Length: 128
Image 1 (cartoon, rainbow, N blue to C red):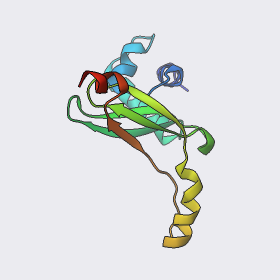
Image 2: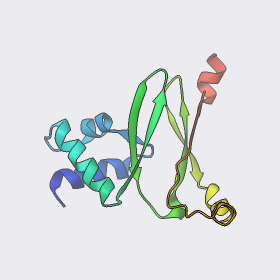
Image 3: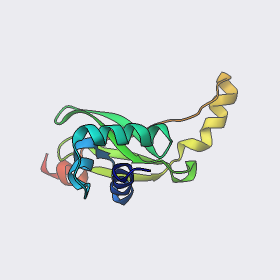
Image 4: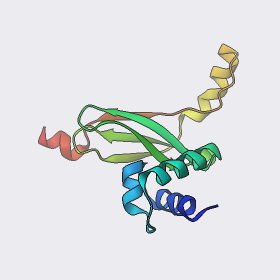
């Protein structure tokens, strides 16, 4: 593992919330350019160290966010505040328990899923 890949993995692993490539680059303790960060992210995701999702936010635009890929018992879902752009970890995945039912009912094999919900966090809701 190269130094930039390890540093990228460390930054994401230390974060309690998903991070964009720009956020990751700001927190990497070694000198690197954005192209190196993107190459590291691509490699780490291809090797199943990371999970990413694309978030469409009317206030902040469309961006890809990264989290550490864990076992299915450590898979999390996220709430995203449309105003302050805060992520709230909704905890372990409750959807995993119904996936076998979907597989049986529809004759499919689920290999991954992603869920995030958007709205207003409690602080922004109170101000709105």
